[in-house]
Length: 500
Image (cartoon, rainbow, N blue to C red; front, top):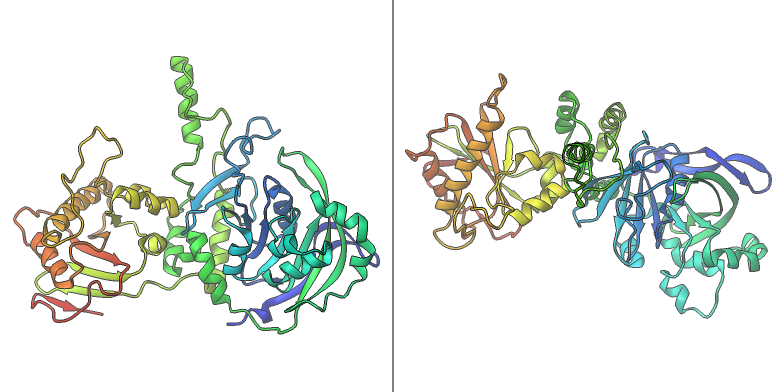
């Protein structure tokens, strides 16, 4: 559905805004049905300026920081601050493409900082139009660098296509922009940018605001504001944004049912499996007290106790349910029921890393090779405790599955039996002392063997009817495949029936 009807224009923030007169706040169209998107190309370690701008708007936002050589906030020296030795940012997850996602831990407002290591022009062409384009460094603008003309108007004409109708271009008075403003500021303010290919750009005044810099010091920022108006206006579909959001942030990839379950079970905000957490810091501190040894692999900085305040995270989940058009549908696949038992095999087409949030459930376990499992828990850290270990991390340790072969003829029977046996053990260990133990469990894996459906069904049937199988619970196997030609349905063995 078009998002145009949900836009409202009001003054937002505590900016000091000067145009024809002096005002507090800036006028901006906000689509209340989705998070704001702010892009900051070639940010270096100046992303603090743009995030302080977005924080003023008091609306959920995604800050996309694009740089060929990014300055991640959890790496030296960007992790340090003047606030003692406390880390302000925490890493949450990775996107489907592997870009790290961070947040400012003491900020209650829903927000995400995506650190993209890429060419800004290439990346901005691939994503939906942004609400705010924040510029302070302009070397990344290819057409501007090739042009013989140098000026603010040339910059604006080159970047306006990346911004939606009614969106803003913010020119921070830093670096070369400061020099350009000093030479042709009056001309810029009076210019008519109607000559742009697809956009008209109007000057909307000057703003100043207070925000933190890279050293966590309070700093006064000043910038010029320009509003983009598209000549050929068209309504943007929320679906375009939702499809992009769910590849960045796991909650947007989940279903209404899953979000309700997260709320009901009081789950807390996840943290990246490689993040330096409070538990790790506390363990290191105790080890130093006991042994007078400082382990180099641990930082001396103090990480936050939690990545997101619990009550604020719950409010975000409720906001998601109120705007459930941002959530994903439940997965649509095929289900095959064993006619002589309650066991099932499910087949879904897609990328298991991308689908990881949609597959998540308490009684589900993922069984894949080590390298792929790392991508899955990077994408969605809640899976960390639900991985079936098939290969050990230590080269000196023996693998649970010896001489594991994943593809080829006559592979599936042995592989499926070993995966299901290890999965059943993981399930029993998890629910060992629970009164509300589930009556079934689900093992999720990827295409194996020759990718033949009947071969897979026979392999699973061989396990559930084997004398070695003493598991009293209902067992389900879910297989995710990427290739269209895998697991095509022709004729089924008589012991299986398709139920959807």
